[in-house]
Length: 544
Length: 67
Image (cartoon, rainbow over all chains, first blue to last red; front, top):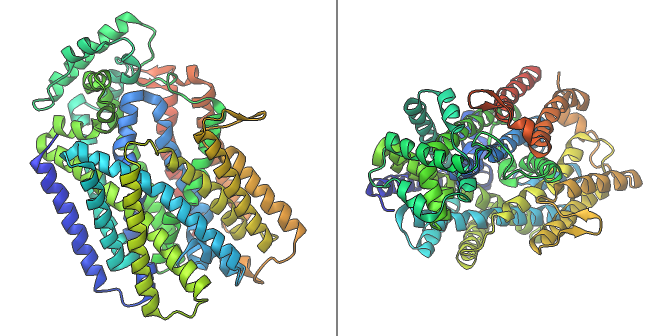
């Protein structure tokens, strides 16, 4: 599917992003500018930067896409990803700003001075989390641009990777933050407009849900609809309009429900739900994982004062919540109005289209080429912003923790650190591009689950104890991080290897149910066995 | 206000109970979650939609206590 309007809008997003990066480059005069934007970003801008940093293409296209394919069972996912921010706010945001400097390792090293082993461990965890999170983004970026604009997959991966590398190399977190503000406005506005267009078309939110009760989830309906029948009811995507699409969808849904009247509806759960243990593990991994993501935590360093970190997080929570609320309704509306199209795509083997294109197709159906172009630009902005944030987190950690502190032992000059940071950004970006090219076609979305699991069981657990527990010791910090990391990776590898259980312990979709308690237990036990609680008065100073 | 661990726990524990309650509802009580309340609004969807004001309310309460 190629659209000139979509291409123009994507080019505009790319050009504005590069313009912001160039503007930022002129203002990077110190390493603090590169790593922390000179600690001068207003809280309202950080709120928007955090919004687009967190909302990847998986959120922009995947949340509404998932709900439109699978129904209410997929609503739980955006709720989990939204709720995680409450912990970020209450447990971490302003405390991280109070004690940290440039990276997550700095938060730990502020209490346990000179703990190089802790810094190395935090650097390794940051690189693993960022890489595992970034490669699926690159693969998704390549696939989406192929779908949206007919770009060859390698071209899409290289163009997006190169664009983000340039942004990070030019201005570090400064250019990333300011370009993310623009990208957030694009993706948020796009989802808002599609949501409003659906409200007008259906006649209100209640009408969307009422109609959604008349159709089953498309992914379930494919068991009852063969390819021939599906094709009869598929609307033409070039001439699609709302009333024609809804009529065909309701007709096909009626035929499907006549075959099985007990079939669950789009607004009911059950057909694609996880069992309670998997659900609990996922809930734990998401809510703790969000506050352990390094590309979120390092943004708190960019504001002038700790209270700005709090305000920025609150702003992000409202933005992200609003976005997910729009997405949920867009998902149900698309699953209803585009039911016959999605069933047709699924029945004819166009599964990636069925899962990723409902938002873009909604734009086309409700607002023509213009709204479709904005939706495509929103997806592009979501990809750029998340990859940018991840690349900055990995770059800062390798350049600051590994090079400046571990290798050069704090003796590197500012110029040297800036040069190394830019080289590291290029290397990190190249690795992401190569990863995206080599792993084409592999379903590596599970790596994001791993990233959340590792973040939950290494950074989140250790940071909670570091920022809130007086008895926590240096050895306890190492133990909690190491044990959490090892248990999380072990269970993910078992899952990837297709192992169903480790003895009596079932292998779940997310390792957090095992790795989080293991990390806490290791931190607590080792802390009670050792004595070095770090800097005197550390907790008193941050909670004063 | 809301400065030490106990204050924070008083705020966050009820929120976590609501959050994990939803995870359990969707994982173990699918029939209840699928029960229609009115029109197309089901129990599970109503719970999901309520999470937004509950979350925003918790956040605003925390901010008020931190001032």
